[in-house]
Length: 342
Image (cartoon, rainbow, N blue to C red):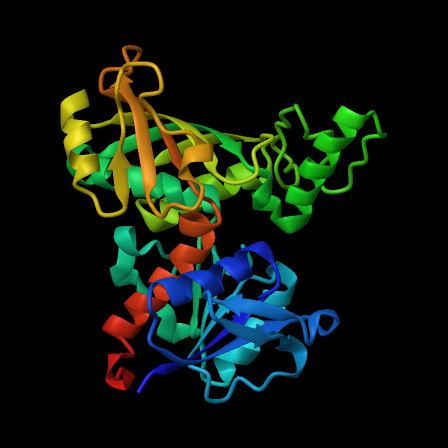
């Protein structure tokens, strides 16, 4: 006996990626339902290469009998409909920021803190972390286990797909406009993103940091260790898919380059590509469509006693969103819902 799965926000970039990932990984689903707003009802979305699903209205859907719902429909929509789905018996895995810092909702990256999934029973909701946080904690976890990370400084270079399809469309349209000398129109970003970098993601807070920067610090502490100090500077860059991060780590125990390479290479989902030569590193363009978190340019930080610097890239639509959500669902099935499996 398999599971009934629903994907809310199925017409968006992450929702479509969730459907693709479910099929690619042979998730044990007997039925898959695509949900979105009423404006999208009847639109066809792909489930794998051969199946097509017609979108149904989220606000009219009865979740009774649905086992798992993957939400990628934004915080306000999740805030309204995720509790409804949970109350009707479905386990919700939400990709928005709405529930991440709720003490009664586990925030999960399965390779990092899978045991915390059991906390879903409090609300029937599990949160997926911010895309930039997900890849970061994948890199920090093996280092923390061996060397005890006490502080991290992170500069992110985040692709426009982090703002969804509208962000990708804006980069495409602005790039075209530059070449044909059309006016530059901006609606998704505060400044021109084509051929530019914008040091501003999400809203500004009173202390001068953006909410994206705050999320990285708060979510890392919730997932990994509340004692880790972390400061982030988040930048939107003119890349379609793939987030990059320059990470500066300080540890309590002595850390060396080879020891770091060894523990990172052994960690599930992390791939080290670190050759000190031209092109001996991974870029966002190369990681697009890949599941792994790639680590490059590992070297010692000579400015602190126990310091390490590295470059980290990952496909933000996959490990940063869709893949991580599906992995949560897989872990949920394996550890907590397995009595229903075929």
